[in-house]
Length: 527
Image (tube, rainbow, N blue to C red; front, side, top):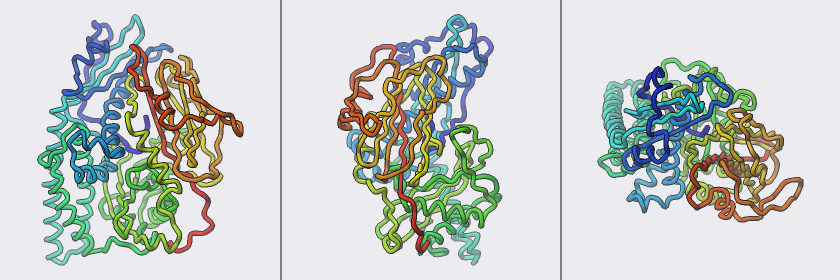
């Protein structure tokens, strides 16, 4: 599953392939044994298995199973974070106070790099049945210990860089002071990631998160930056220049190809006309102020084949009283490591004066729907489902008359249900009980339909579910050549996810992609 956030796991313990192929099957291959060996209160765990239908290279098959097992583990952590930050109801059940909830809601957006310590991966191949298995796991106490240490080290680093910046100011070396303050922003992103993961693992106490000290240091760094260069800018062009120059100041050598993701509003993954203009302006400034080249990928033909990309830039923007606050992160594309970060503000008055919307047209309805999707979200497990568009999966903006293509891939024979939730609230059933047999497993399937972006505009959702038995039937009505679902959203989710425990051997997976559609621009006014 490809998501807005890039996740990279390291510090794995690998078992050698020799001897594993012919050894007796380990107990964790069986579901009941696996659950007993790795209870969720003590471990985080991911598992995957795959039948060798095509007599593929065994090493390649095992590597794919390992990757799928890692994806399941990381996905469970991401879903926990999203459940807390999106629904806003789990904080009551988990003991998270409202202040911590609001803090994690913002900090979790930068969550990207899950660097687990002590993660173990094991694998097994049954030659007779031609089935590969992989499991990855770690003790919760060890993971929690690792991230507590990461937060403490990050705070020590912040204190040192803040002190250095203050010394540079006293020595009237303002450029060096500003550079040191800027580098603090990157460390804040790393600390925030660690704090989000701890909350997902059930640790939200102040001693673990050190939230208060982090906020105190952040206020001091923001004050220092504003003394040297006021972060509140007067136009989108000024914002873009400040971002490009700030990223360049933090990196000794910034050159190569960069993927520039669209800016999204808070933690919603939704864009807006402001997002479009921000990205257009930033693209121009990155080209003129740095040695970066913008890499525009056609995912229709090269999904996950992006070796030419060196960096990725992601951005979110947040309500901040009379301002809109932007948080931008530059990462190494392959590892997901944060290399630089910058923050700036734009007056809301500028947007009002130039009639630039910073919310999608249907924000209230779309945000309510987003919360419905976040509750009881299905984590794929042994059934892996990937979904993407011709523009990828993350921070998607489609303008009027743009073409949308849809693709998917699964690792096991299963049934697919594909629902498109339009901006006006209507729901189109694109595929239902479409069976992907063994001949299509691990192969890209493209929906035959091509979609042209048109009214109504706003935030839309592609919801895809897979399971190894047929879905409960939805009520539909044919209109304009499409099957429009007449069931309400709660009923659609119930019939698609189901509330009852699955029968033994039945697997489920779910994926959703947020797309923001908007009209074309007649003119850009004052940037």
